[in-house]
Length: 278
Ligand code: PAF
Image (cartoon, rainbow, N blue to C red; front, side, top):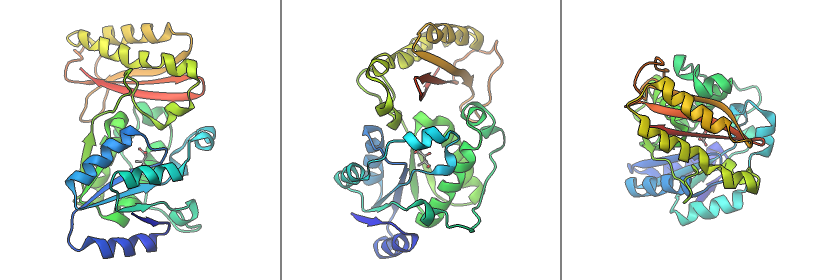
């Protein structure tokens, strides 16, 4: 595995390794876990060359404490990447990624970025768009892999590819869960043990709510909100049911079936998100 710290090293490694081969790319912010590993397995299996990036992107954090506390352990990350057959990893510094005085290309995502995560985390998707746009320009992948835990991010990236006019195929990958149902996330490591023990209740509630799929969004919303707000350790930020293709919320009297439920919950100072299909 070649570790590249600079854009120049990356382009040299790609030039030497590519030779007409297909490139699969997994961008990450490190703190890698089994959820990432499932993306790595696919990228490895479906492409000749498997490239990953590890970069905690400061401009997508709307909360300075979240950025400060974001787990970072590059040694363990590179070990996991090596074990998963990664050929090239790009791990730039902040200065390398965003040289002072150099303008970045920025994208707008219309109503995709004004709902749910976009509404609660101002600037988040702009920051994601900038960094993934830059990474796509550098790596020029044939396929790029993203986890569906960040369902809205997948829609944003699909729109980004359309705006950039590139051929990269975006491959959404199913959410990976711990045995107790909690969606895997780098932030889970920050949960207090007692909160970690209760956190699976989020997925259990969403899963149970699929039994109500024929009912109205209003009924499901009220039911989920009631269950989550009854847990003293949980602070519900939102639960919305939206259309999978454009993420726009449904009318309260519309049936949930065929749509997706999205949730964000705070436990202590850790923010957890999850989603479920109806
Ligand atoms: O999903 C993530 O880890 C990040 O948002 C991404 C896509 C690597 C961009 O920084």
